[in-house]
Length: 206
Image (tube, rainbow, N blue to C red; front, side, top):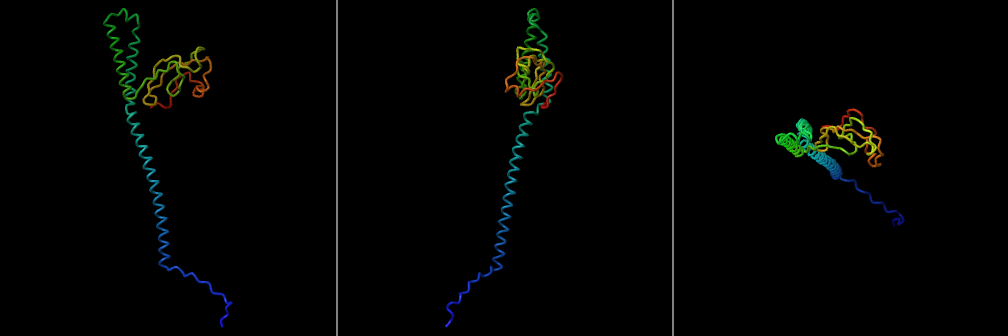
């Protein structure tokens, strides 16, 4: 009689068939390759989207600022028309007769039409009288002692400026008041510490 107390041997796990083992390895390799390709695809799509947005911005900038050089020349003509009108004071107009009045009105009309044409192409005037000095759009020529306005206020405009889009085309030449009351804290934060006494070139000129 066999020994009933003898332990039953544990079943052994058969080894994987070499073909099955190779198949599993191949599946794992394909899954890794698919994951890598997915990552590459996502990166490529992201790069293409960034390129598309950058191209759109460049096209928009090109459209907006394509007339920069032309506009810079034209604003000089607008200045000359303004000076021509300013050269004829009220007394001269009153005593100059209809011919002079018609001439002055024609020059004024031409100036207005020129300014409208510039605005149509995104070029606008910068006339900062009474505003806070902004070194991005104004060029301080001198300081004016004036206690009636907050320190750093533009109290005199020697020459109006122009901007195209959000970029300065030509800074306005201004005189800045000093000695008045301090500006409000929010305004002081944006105000330059000391506007230059001489020519100050802005960094954003196009």
